[in-house]
Amino acid sequence: MLNAMENASSVEIKKGFVIAEHSPEKRSKLKNILIASMSNNDIDSRIFALSWIETRMRTNTRNGDQGKACGIFQIHARYSYPMFRRKYGFRNWEESSNKKKIKYECNKLKKVKYSVNTLNKYLKIFDKRKLHVCHHNSGIYGKCNTWYKKRVEFFLNYFNFSKVLCSNNMKSITVKQFYRYQKLTNKILKLIN
Image (spheres, rainbow, N blue to C red):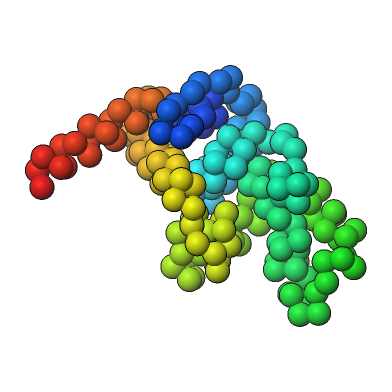
């Protein structure tokens, strides 16, 4: 699975699904993500797909969204703190009077294990409400951006396929190879139907 993660971290998908290659993230840092993501000897591909789309699986990233999104999944601390850490949730919550707590939460979200733990809590909410993973970007009440959703879907499929290959002790394929495979499969399905 580590090879698939390395392949994904070395790729950027631009508009029109143009795949550009870059240098991959260090294997030791990818291994930290892999270890933090494992639960009952299983890996949730959604975690890898979201880490790719938000930071291309980079662990030491700047805060995005004008300094408000933190960590590998670019989670907003102003929402995650009251949602998961505060006893009363959003009741009587004022962002302006809790700046220190938000900054502290943001610093904790920079740690991979804590960030994965927080993302798992979000994923449980998505599962409960039967929402697509793309709501990580838009929120549970928002509407999914189609370009964001398309790339998340692609990497969900890539990592699920990589899990199957790993479980059968087969070598992982590159993102470009998977893209060609997916295009070919879609053409065959169109011919059949």
